[in-house]
Amino acid sequence: MQAIFRLDQITGRFLRVVAISCLIVLMFILGANVISRVTGWFSMGWYDEIIELCFAWMVFFGAAELWRENQHFRIDWLYYTLPWAKRRIHTAVISAINIFFLGFLFVEGWNLTERSSALTPIIGFPVAILYVCIPISAGIMLLYAIIDLFRHSPRHAAETETIDDI
Image (cartoon, rainbow, N blue to C red; front, side, top):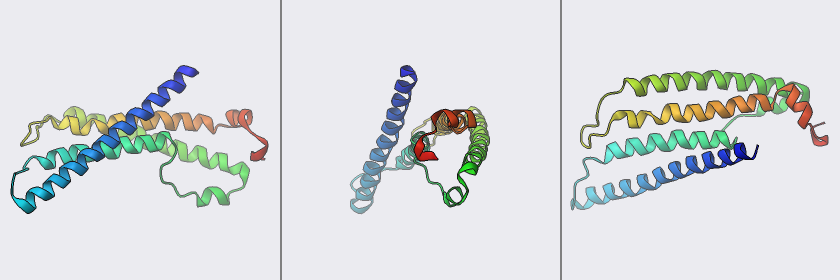
């Protein structure tokens, strides 16, 4: 159990480092582009390729980290209007829908990554580097969605039920 907890921590740290690093690179490159356009001192014809890559990686790995931490945006109005006993059913249905969607995103993201053979026009990066963040992040989110489904199963819920839940 300790190894799983440690792997979870490493995954979270990796996802945060990638997302934050991409944000920092985005800030510097966009700032340099503004200076370049205002002053005309240097040219940055390549910046949009790096921006595209960093933005995609930041969004997908950031979403995976939010999913891992269960901090992603959700509207929980319906959840709190349901009686306590039906909340687990609601959560299980939502988890099943999430698993279906993330499985689809994983498969299609993998297909997109596999089929891409193009290179970026200026720098010459393989476009697959841009797309690979989709199946990786979808796989991470899918794993956590499956864990979440089991966490809210009636058997597991009965084992972890506390006095505050009643």
